[in-house]
Image (tube, rainbow, N blue to C red; front, side, top):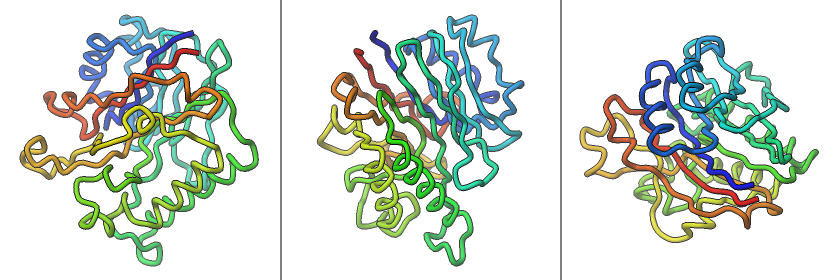
Amino acid sequence: MSFTLATWNINSVRLREGLVARLLTEESPDILCLQECKSPVEKIPVDGFRALGYEHMIARGQKGYNGVAILSKRPVEEVAAYDYASLGHARHIAGRLEDGTVIHNFYVPAGGDKPDRTINEKFGQKLDYLTAMRDAFHADRPERSILVGDLNIAPREDDVWDHKKMVKVVSHTPVEVEHLGDMQEAGGWVDVTRKDLPEGRLYSWWSYRSPDWDAADKGRRLDHIWATPDIAGAAHGSRILRACRGWQQPSDHAPVFATFDL
């Protein structure tokens, strides 16, 4: 089985329904994983996506915040939706394809502005969430699985526009990178994007605060596609569709793609 998968923090699926439809029409991935849907599940505009061939959806949602969904041309069966760190947030959904491949779609907490859990509760929640993911993967090491989503951490020096300036900024601090690495190691996850594109700067997010995001290019690679070692070698064709960041009323994230020949 061969399929192309994309992951995209859409920053409101209802507000940006047209952008999702455009991506599905122009790029036609077999599976699209969305984060930050900001919608109860029953209000996700699924009818329009079904009309484009995406007849299957599994999702977790909440009004105005968080939310994850998997849209698929192929049948997908929900197998889990964990509330890691018991935050009460809709941040995870997992589905199994017909061939047994499991796809985990995550929206890891952003962590607020200050990288200090003693003064910033949100930063503590982020670290606790990653720790809970680590412990879960230690207890039940995944096989034939793909992990995607907005993990809200740019781990490598070339995943940010300026490592020295960013090292004390939430999303690139050493403690976050360490927590992400521990979680990745616990699951044996392979960073598919960097397997395919090992060299050079890569970004998937550019702040709304930049008046000219494209020219300034102060990006971060916050969005990831990982796979377990037993199928990571079947992945290829990784790319980040930067052009989407320039669409009208865009998300501040760009979608990330990979193809799997299983």
